Picture 1 (cartoon, rainbow, N blue to C red):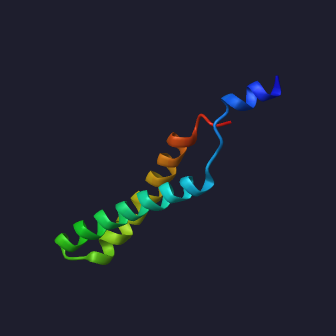
Picture 2: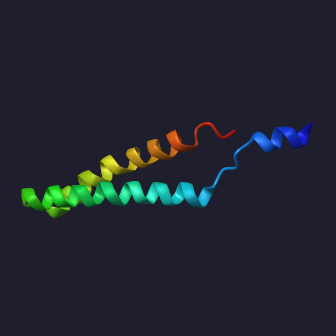
Length: 69
């Protein structure tokens, strides 16, 4: 019975979760830098992109891996 239960489980991939976290954060910071550059303040855009990117990255990883127990 144990083999049947473990066959249905999907394993958690920490490397994939970390890569997804980093990718979403980098995209948000990049978009923030572009918007900041267009507005005349790259540093402000990077800061705002980081503030938006951190919760967005966490939410993306959570949504991706929430069904793995």
